[in-house]
Length: 488
Ligand SMILES: Cc1cc2nc3c(=O)[nH]c(=O)nc-3n(C[C@H](O)[C@H](O)[C@H](O)COP(=O)(O)OP(=O)(O)OC[C@H]3O[C@@H](n4cnc5c(N)ncnc54)[C@H](O)[C@@H]3O)c2cc1C
Image (cartoon, rainbow, N blue to C red; front, top):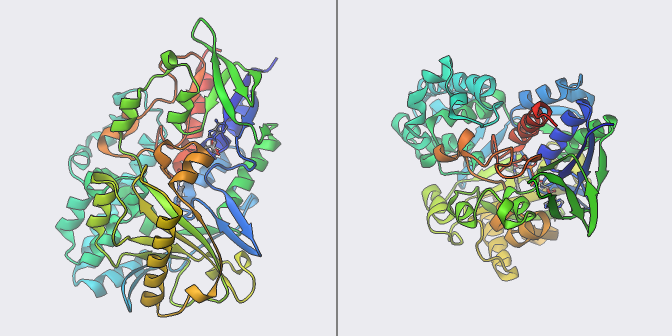
């Protein structure tokens, strides 16, 4: 008889774990509360427009490739991946746009134009970032976070200085141009914390950005979900949608025995939750929870977001597939996310126009527009606030890119803190998990294996290695290894 594993949630980490565990011979069942699979990587299709509702940046293509290779497959067996040029552009004001091209040479040239001498400094910076990327991928991120000793290897020991300084300090030391400083601090925002609170070692994200590039899977990020679901199904994983888990059952020996789904009992040898870690523990009786409310409350969470999905009755100009609007004070916006949670007066925002490079994502002659404003988790979310910020960002978009957009809006849907809580059971409505700060890295993150309940495991963006789609794939692999190694 095969051992049975139930997985709570169908985000990338769960999908990844499901395939690895099925390949190892387990009978795997995935239970998802919503009617679609893929967790936060949802797709919205409306009136011929296609939107990715969550992740939109495809970075670290090597991590995806390595995942598919583990199953004897390759990325190209599932979708067509194109490198974007520019990878993205950054708007600092009217007619002040810096494009980040698809090669280091193009990026060195644009840096030099902005600040004389900066290309040489960038070369040095990227050399160290590349070195750290290789160490991170080979030596660190594929470790389960069981012990601090995992971090100590002959290569990492030489890098101890990189854990004592931070990204902001390094960037400010070498670059004078405020624009270049902001560009170089952007990649670490994916880790969910302020650059001043992110160890220098994480400059490997700069290599992921400039060195490895920004890619787009045709038809959008949802193609990854389709790929991973089809892979899992080919390995006999069973999916159950509209299946909210309301309890994790634990017997009197402290062993997980299954779950309660929509009031029905499902027995299992192992329970693995890929749902938000905090929520997953609320499915246990209080005595079986490893982390208290006070523990979660003290943690630094990645931001939540106010998101808009807009169908435009025109083709836009002066906008790339990915455009960052950094025309306001970066530090001030970070302050109201992390230090004094409140709505930003002048928000930074990110605009995504996928149909600029992938015309199938909008009807002919039109463009799909997705806007994201990062905000503090847990802040007030009302229809009036959403409306106010829609007007703020649309006005800025129109002015900075010199075109009308508001009057061409065919529809606009929004998603914010309340939806993250309602749709994904996300703690305080965080969008992408627990930040990767020095004190929330590796063995200091919530554990993959429950400290209190036998045969209960966790995966996803609140545990190791951290937020983002590539880390979610890795998290699924790590937990599947722990489960396989356990003596069930
Ligand atoms: C707006 C946004 C933009 C992002 N941008 C990027 C990007 O550009 N690039 C990138 O790499 N990453 C990005 N991320 C982060 C990335 O999407 C996430 O880190 C990753 O998708 C998280 O996957 P996960 O497996 O941890 O869980 P989730 O995607 O959170 O999946 C958990 C699943 O569990 C389900 N669930 C919850 N409770 C229950 C229950 N009781 N019973 C059953 N099911 C339950 C939820 O419905 C959900 O489907 C972004 C995230 C957001 C929200």
